[in-house]
Image (cartoon, rainbow, N blue to C red):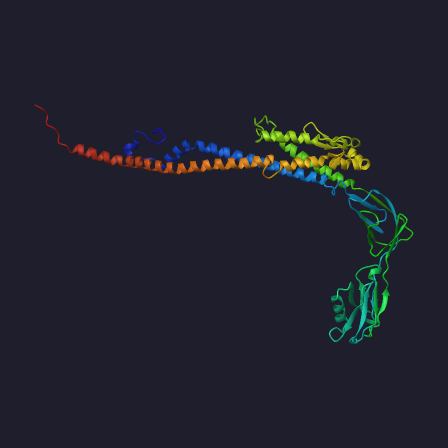
Length: 452
């Protein structure tokens, strides 16, 4: 360090100005901190790379999720829809086991429940009992005594038996009555009251009946207005009866759902391949590429993704690759969807479309192949990016440890320099006094007589 950097000049010693120890020490340490600055820059670069790797890993997981939807044998591309021409009369739902086709339904009557009502009740109900029977089940005795001999008390007592009946208190123009209603519909829920000795005077107000309908000319009787098992994989919901109104029911592939699943896959794929490509795109303005441009594993991932997009199966009536269903590979590696061609494939080649994604001619389907490969790529310990992320984390820990050790050494160095230059400062500040003492001593010496 030069005397100039210490603020020393010809008058410093004689004036006792000393030096600024803090500034001197800081200046020296700044010149010795270049290795730490380089390490911090390296740590920041590793952090940026870690962020990029993590983002790409999220993209891989998103792509895996999207391809699962196409590979699920009970998912979007195997789903079926059931469409009724009279949704005011019948609605329907279909699962993946339902066969595509057209059906005709006529609903003659709905399934209804059963009910009873007592005569108007005045004062306490008389002690006694009655038998309550639901369908073919054994009759249950209902006993009335002073613990439940009010309309509300008896209703509460009956409901607590959990017989499949709901008891309630209703009031009409003639007074208060006890009403009983079956919880279910159809003949198995028909109510019978017998042996009444309470004086309640029950009257049957509704007899349970089964729903009556025809499906493709075949007569069907159902205890419920929700009808299953008549058409495989299809559930019919009967809403209203209309004996003279044929209802057209269409069961078909869920084209909108399958289209959405394909578009979601394309979106996830494009997002990932675009992010990968950007790492290798040179920026003329900055003279740099992406922070992962030197990562060989990432280049391998880019190649693998492009290979996945060109995977094909043999035969399958011409539906052999993504392009054959309307998903085309662009020059930049992204995919684009030809909506018209995809719609035509779903309308006219639904089975072949499913076979391409899930299996075809004994070959692994596209979704199965890509899903297996992506599961390997996203493996928590062996996945390509997860390995790179783990190595990056280790590198960051190593660099941070070096920085910590360097800073520990700087603390010791600062203490040493502070002690050293504090001594210099003290010496310089004491110099004028020492000089005055010397001059005083020199002035007190006797003057020598001249030689003769």
